Length: 417
Image (tube, rainbow, N blue to C red; front, side, top):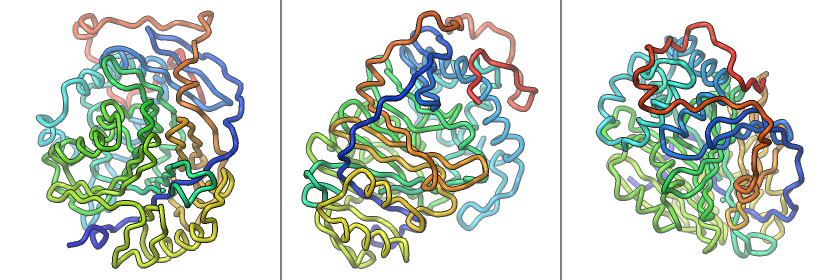
């Protein structure tokens, strides 16, 4: 079956010109832990992680402790026992997540288990809860968007991403921007949520950006979890071809679609990388289910959303700026479940991020925060800020058993609500 006949959720890609500069923002260091630190940039939480996998996990759990605990409690206890629709099935997420973990364990690099050990130790939650929370994305799926060359004002490639996903699960209350410098890996930024070490939306310092979209195939879990495949691209994908190879050459799980862009070469592709299929679509490519191809774009969507996206893209062909690029993600292109929107400018490593509101209004209607990865990597913490000791891994292994995520949350040194 052709690639887009299998696309069952809202997906879109658009690469657009962004002319305005990233604005200066006030910043405040909240706390430090080892080489990691938490700051508020214009009020947005930015978590800097650096070192070994265990150290990065520990920094995450220590510096964002309260949010990690509350988010995991919400997902695994309050929501985890509720019946939800997942494709054709009605399931209780926690009732199946342990079996998924058992199937996928052999496919997950050891470094991610180490990072989860550090996270659970510092956040004072059960290791099994940290693992379960990070495998929830295998049950639920999302969306994304892209334009370049003649489609933009100056030819620069940009990559947008719309995530329509579980807005009623209150993930937006625990949003965080993670700036990671993994030992031996490429630095990257991950647009994510407290307690999640994988990625569904990110960009690395080599100007490669990626977002995922979900489809069918529920039950095909014998492979590398989607969020860890994306994380691998961020850590090891130095260019578009290397990123594609990571998806192509690893065992994969359910039906997933991805958009990957490389600002160095002005290339972007859409792909299906499912358990049984790998297929690419280049920019401007025609397809029976995409009847309005636009030169130098990759547009992936369905129904009226696709028609509106194509109309907007054609209308702005060659003249997109920052404001009009962001408006491409306005409703109804974004759905009511719009959890976050991100616009990447991979060559310059700029990004714009918006999250859904606490009262469940879509991200497309909220404030966009502007960042630049190269700037974030160059920043230093205020050394007068409180410091949380980083407990060595061996010491953590001999520590008493941790309490469950549904225990009363303890106050961490870094409260950002």
